[in-house]
Image: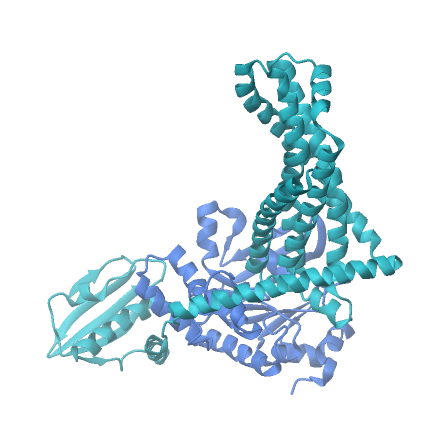
Length: 375
Length: 258
């Protein structure tokens, strides 16, 4: 009898008795340890009958089952007879279960026809468009309700959100805006110095920050900071059935959860944008002083020759719109979230992407509109 | 899965365990021993510290004092490699199943096998199918957790806990939130696992039906006492305990032992 073994713990020996190959297992068979393979045990032999024995096995788990199952499957394929009578009842029962699960476990086909996929995607776009329209409509109705009966509005929640999305965002908005001002000053200086027009850096930065970058950068920062937080909070509330609880009490989620957030962003965004403008101009001023030797007074006076109040108004109008976009995207994605941890994560990501996309689109639309009205 | 052998070493032994959070003790001086192959229940009312004790037993929240020994070994004796080896010896079914939502049931059960064994992909597939069949989830291998019911999640969680054929399985409130029939089936499954594989099962529960139907022994925790107030076979405790807290808990709802 030759001991065929892959592990000192799990051992197998195979011996021919007449026309039967007796396969005797011994030792300790554990799933985390290596075990002998059936083909190794079989070698070049091709028996008509095999008998499986486990008398000398001290300890076993699924590792032993897998070996026995391999032997059984080989017999099934070659037509050999597999004698399992010597196996304990428990092991025989588990082998039956393993065979049954092997035969009944059929991979679930999730693939779908191309045309069906296109159709479903189209349908999905239409459904989402309808959902967005309905959501915006509900927000408008809710805003009308707020104007009619302001005493019923949740001012406390709104103030809390203002603090969260406004005051708490000052450091990050300030830092980013200052650095944007610095970057613009360096980039502008590269060109303007060649023509001796260093002083016009002040015009470039002033106009860029006030009309575009202040509102845009604040919008992008708040999309990542506040929009994602709105989506995650509302998504989590949906997963915990808190939104359902509101609806069953007859309290629309839009009134209770969305409007305070929208109002908070709508109010705080223009203030943050003005703050961003100031910090951006300050960044440009610092570079102008250091790199181009333009005094802060000259910088300020030059900037005032081109930046008018209407430019500031343009920035503020954009900021209000971007704030509403960030709030709407965050709340909508949160309310649309699937009821799972992964769904909440997807909602937060989607809120940021949606908000930034619509901010860019809105900015382009504003550019055309302001051009038409001459602002 | 081993032939029953008389061994003096308990499968789990808690020695003067003090458990809690942030230095605040919830349970004090807890000592008990779980015999190999036993279905052992930790019972008690809501907020008495059952889940806290379970978290200390499985090493998630280290005890504030005392130690837990698994067949003579303990977490604190070990380096990270040995700790990993010790963790392989037990499986845990969490209250909600705690399935990984981004993975299918097949992938959930396969993950421990992929991490801890050198099995081929085909072998893992066979074993996963077996484990899921044992908990009655054949045909649901490729479903995601979000697509199945609460009871099915628990059964899938149990299949994952059993993936590495652990010697000890901990179950946290396995019947909570399930209908009586599903709950009964889960109890039967727990008993079957013990009878078939000799697995030691530690169950945290306050479901009287489960306690009387499958528990060999119980320890009862009490919030006020911050510790164990009774230990023994549930039916005996219900009949003979002189502690009104124990009899009140075990006989409430007309579920007197037959």
